[in-house]
Image (cartoon, rainbow, N blue to C red; front, side, top):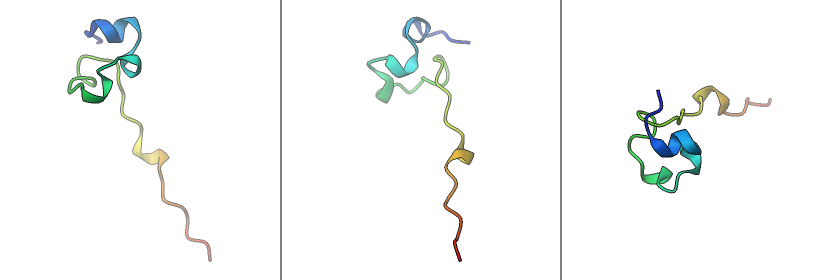
Length: 45
């Protein structure tokens, strides 16, 4: 549930304090990107 008034209005990413906010994942709407999207390149032989 989003409790932050800025996250409710425009979203966490557009907030001016996004880079320093310690609670963006707790009271905001920020979701961490999945680690599976950044796979290392396959070894070409």
